[in-house]
Length: 188
Image (cartoon, rainbow, N blue to C red; front, top):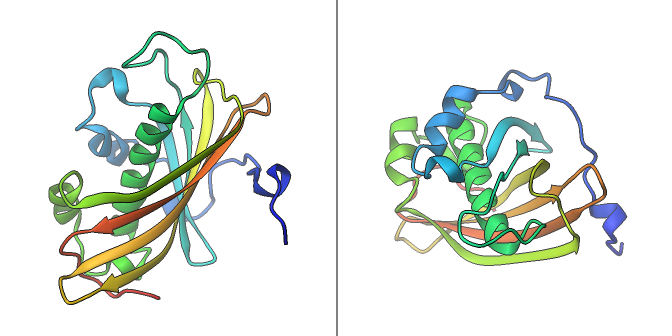
């Protein structure tokens, strides 16, 4: 099957009706705590399971760029920051609700300790198909396969992400993560 923008484009939807789909503002605030106040772009987030994948769907807003004059569109630096914020929330919620065997045995306290030093991006790919308005837009991150590598406790995970606005702006990407000293039951 060939993938086109239409097959990749997410369909915006409301909050999940599952218990973990509830908008958890307290958890989101704690996840965003390491970010400077003017760089906390995720406004709300909902996590659900889809085919055994943890999926976070978010509302985002970037009132002004934190590093450059206004470009008028969502750019690759902002893509990376937004991805980080959503993936951290996804992992925190997966740990809290025990949604993924990859994080089996993790506690929220362990996640807070590991959030910045032990979760690394090993590969980052983004594709901008149509400009996205950064003032109000949507995002989705999917946690996909996780696998162990060697006896060191390193866990690798593939993720996908998408961002879109209400005027057909769209971009997507693939990001690989490494978790240093991870424990949990890994799936291949």
